[in-house]
Length: 258
Image 1 (cartoon, rainbow, N blue to C red):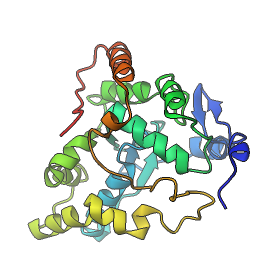
Image 2: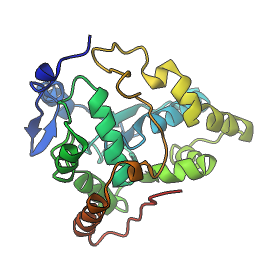
Image 3: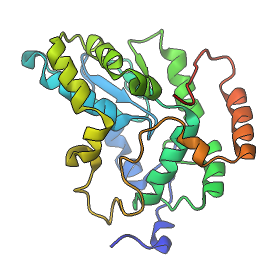
């Protein structure tokens, strides 16, 4: 049975260095901080609901079809404490679609506080009071470091538009060389439709008490531009102004629709 709204209100986020995190993460923070990455580790460092599962699946399939004697560890993190020792690909999605996806994820994730109404969540998100903090700080922080470290910056919208080209980028970043037929297989097996059907990626085996997919599926739409079905004109204009202020000085450019 899913948690009641009253119980979910008790699952408040706790802050570490000003970043709101789940209690389970905070309780294990010392262990996380003491993690020692290897020089060839691949750190998948995403903001939540920006294509994490998709990139993990792509990396796993490239690794499975590559040189088994040169396997890398792929570690998922939503922030960047280990960049000096690991090579991170940084998948990101435009902020409006990310907010929508995160909202529905928080609705169905019984381990997170109830997000409230869309109007309430809008305020929570733009103020960076969601789990893992501000989208702006995360993306801008990584973008500013992309030329100083070995970082591959990927965009969800580009993967949707040309998955083969983006998978090739990941493959080259990992130092892998795969046959064209293997590459085509990875493109097919990591398609949104395939992942939505795969219990390993759609999280259908996770108990309803943790992920209640009767509220919203874990892998929901995977589209670009779904924000238009949620944002009012006033919200969109306000968001655009906040985005301009927060992301001022960066050359990063997101596609808002395909």
